[in-house]
Image (cartoon, rainbow, N blue to C red; front, side):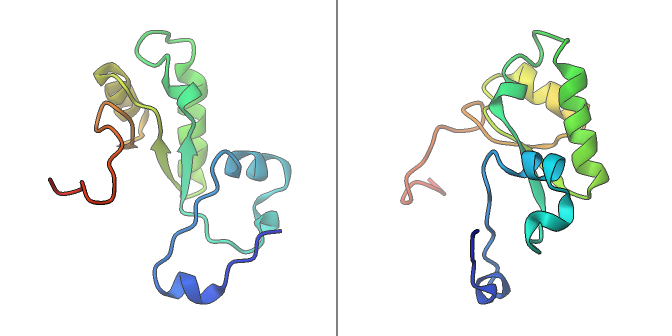
Length: 113
């Protein structure tokens, strides 16, 4: 069990659980997430890597994006490395993404430069 002081949330702190939310929604049901307010679902790089090249993966990726929307969650794709992947994600309804296509990782003193 993870215990996070509620006061943190009143200060705007956002907590992300990497690679866990979809499994939790699938196996335990939304109420079993312990009262956390879930605002986003991260789309793992494994669903992004072949987008634009292999259209066989697009229906599964679209299903995840649609599920996320039906649950009123934002979808954030991770591991976007190519313009074709970014374009396909936009086409599938996923406008939020991160990855080397947008920027290499930055240290704390780098943003804004």
